[in-house]
Image 1 (tube, rainbow, N blue to C red):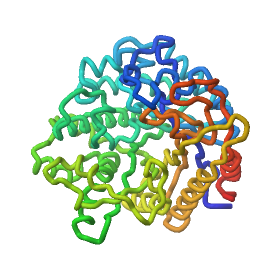
Image 2 (cartoon, rainbow, N blue to C red):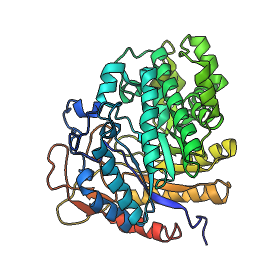
Image 3 (spheres, rainbow, N blue to C red):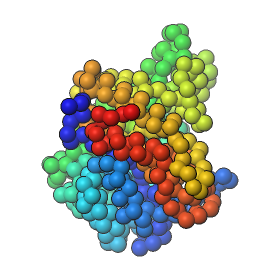
Image 4 (cartoon, one colour):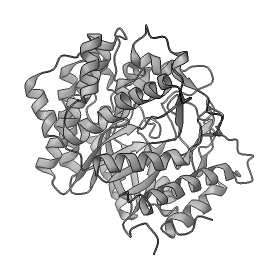
Length: 457
């Protein structure tokens, strides 16, 4: 029988700006990604892998892989070209076609409402999520999407990797141009918590058959040594980058650890009692996360005069017990099991790992499929760790989604950092023919999904 239930969800995850292209077609407004200056060695976002025009071909490949779930994001500025105001019906019509095509192939669509592509107008006029108004505009946009697809889409996410709004990259992904102070950081964080809560509460009220969850980029921190300072620093990082979000998603409130830090550092965001009541009402139906690698923390490397969110950037050191890829992301499948076990035992909600995979610099020779045995090894070891978490530790896991099953631009615009089972024939600046070529890992992943996890060889 195996450990996986018959309805276990196997699939993949992507974002709109890393896949769709068609940046100025069919009434779409600009997002902050559409004006980024093309840096040396990376791509812009205007074409990506052209999924907007090739989604039927891509969805057919997903179905061939045996996937029964696909998480994608909606481009906010494709629906509201200015982030608010008039709805662009052509944008909705695209997602109508896209979702219907997935359903016709037996693939469960999963919608993420925000994956960092702030509408440019809201970034320029309001400074993105630094503004309370933008949290309200996000909720209004989300209501349009929920109303449109609640009878077709069961699984929903509000924000991709929401804990990044409490990290050093928060200012970039929230559409803000402001001083990178702790007070501004935590105001952004607060507004995204509020926006999340508004959408969760709306879905529970208006779409009771749907399931909605919060998502984080799980930061698994190990102390570099048994030195108490290292252990305590890793603990504090876990509290503020992981546990805070789980607490908000499950119990609708900030942790005492975070509130105490606000007071000690005089960086508490402006909060409204009415908003806090909205937050308190919101409860996730499941908890989801991305996981690629663990991190090792050394307090000796920390400048304590800097705010905590910058200290964590300084503290990371190499873990000599783990291998790593070319980007120094350390491969740690046992860490995956640790996250699943720890989170489930503490919060007792179904878990859904919805991004997992390994990036690799790959070049196709034009004839032979890419031999990516390292990708097979990575996914096999992580699926086995997940099996152990389910069978031995008793964890309830809804599914397993790989990141970018068809190669896409990375979060930094790199085409060379590839995660897929399918190669897309383009590089950073040369679009070539954008053809899709199955890698050797394709057949292996198909074997895994069609056997429902029984065949991992």
